Length: 132
Image (cartoon, rainbow, N blue to C red; front, side, top):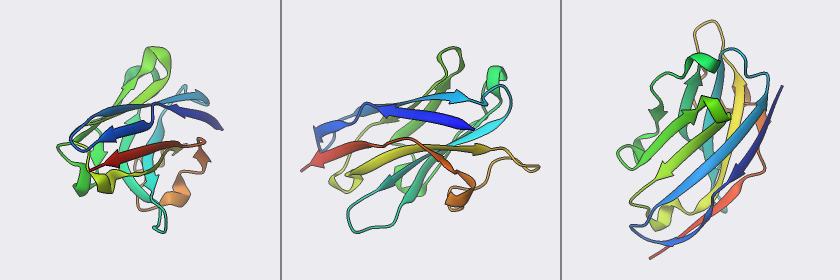
């Protein structure tokens, strides 16, 4: 099992930046998967970025949804068991509740972000609001 706690949300103007943090604990000694997801009012939850962690051995190159490529950067600080989502050039349409979620790595690695059911452990979420 995993436990996750997000922080770092807030309100910014368009073009601004925020960094979200996700502290993870639990079964983190081996490979696991962490996805960043978001959900705007009236919309379905969608995947933003994914980190395939190798535990103390670091992580693989993150993958991103097309709508955040070049603007968002996901990273992991293994020493502090914390994952980050650096969000730059924010747009009003980025306004949403942001979540980090974790799941176990399978035989072929981490599940794509579209398979939300493979990420059963969720943090409480943190609100990001971008004004125009």
